[in-house]
Image (cartoon, rainbow, N blue to C red):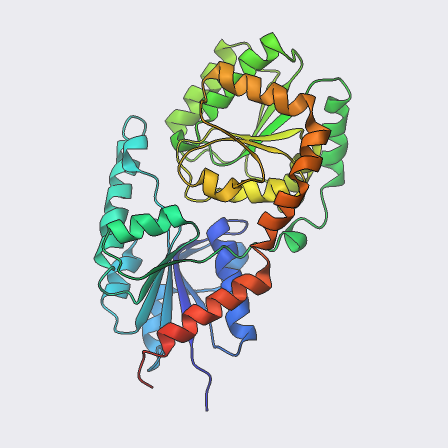
Length: 366
């Protein structure tokens, strides 16, 4: 008897993207368990051309009894396509930034996010399950009409991703560190919801009150051009051009170098659906100081420092307290960090995924 099939759909399939990495992990898990599994996308990066098909190809490959998994991130033609199909569907929701956070910066993006939320709602009655990588995302799903929801952790194989830090980058970062001063790092798109401007303002206070040679590393692609431009203007206006370092999207090897060289991972985001870089920082035993918003407390739990006030003075004081007792903080957090990372062990996540897929497939005739 031919193995049953569980196929994934996503809008954009990109290398080093959290959703793309999750999709690859899901496919690997399904195939190892004996399922036939392919990835279908609306847009596929050239580096992944051999790993996926255009979603329109699915119609000629479909077979009775297929199960479909939609990795939902944005507005796309996929929603209408999947709504028109009859196969059992699981919607895996990776969060849509609240449109109001983009209204002042990019109204077109804000409107696109509103369309995306409408598309997500349109699939509620069609879906056997709505799953999210955080309880925050599951609450969003329930608010949009999903009756059955479940948290499904991301597939995060960090041992494989970060096995070889970039030696050249490590040397460069160590040269800067030898000049003194703390290194603070945040990994994430330059976007309004990530609130890098709050980190920049906090650095200005931190340098004036505590550590005049401190540096801030902002690693990530600009995804909102007006915001990125305003951020650079703020850096120049505050006289921080030599202290705030912008780095566009980096390879896993380069990211590992930043995590290993920094003193703190700092986060002031106003909205995160999960924030995978927090887990990546923990993997590198880098202490996390984060503003307690959206899904951040759920991601950090007791394995980092959560703060309720992100005014520049409060953030600067939190940075100073964490840096002054960094070694003790790392030791104190070690048991909680190990426990937190264990929740994302690929074997444990695989069991949860296969249980969900088996449950949904059991309702499908065939």
